[in-house]
Length: 113
Length: 114
Image (cartoon, rainbow over all chains, first blue to last red; front, side, top):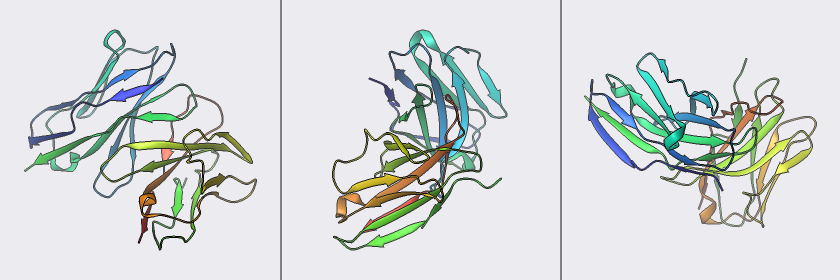
C-alpha cells in the first residue's frame, strides 16, 4: 500500500524566515513519482514539482528547493526567505507511474508579516 | 492552452437532489481523474477515466456516485440523492496520454448540500 505522511499539520513563520515542509512516503514500487502541490486560500491546486524515483538530485527553483532522500523515503520542501504570498496548504503526493495519486494530508503554512 | 476547466465552481443542492459536476481536460489530455477534498482534509482519489473507459474506480463510493468520460464532451461526475456528507470540494485533474505524467488540476467544484 502507498502512503504519504506530512507530520506537520500547521506551521507559522514570520516573513523572511526559511521554512521546511516534511514529507515521508511509503511504497513497495521501485519506480514512482513524487510531487508537491500548493493550495492557496483561493482553493485551486498549483503544481510545483515532480521528481522521478531514479533522480535523487536536489532541485532549486528560485526561493523553493527540494531534498529527495530515497534512503529515508523523504521528499522535503524548503522555502527560503518566506513571503506572505507563500501562505497556503502544501500537499506532497506519490504516484506509481500513471495511476492515481496518493496525497498527504497537507501542511498549512502561515507566513506572518 | 486553456487549463482544466470545471463547472460549476459552486453548486448548492438540497438533500435528495442530484449533483452533476463537469470537467473538461486540458487540450491533448486523454486521462481524467476525480478527487474529493473534505473540509480541512487532503485529497482522496475517486476515479480514473480515459475516453469511454473507467480505468480505476477503487475510490468511488459503491452507491449514488458514477462517472463517465464520453467520446465527445466533458467528463461528468454524478452524485444521486445527495446527502450532507457529500458536501466537499471535488477536483478534476487531467494528464496527457502515456504513463508517468503530471496531473494538472482544475479549480474544483464546491458542493454544498443543505
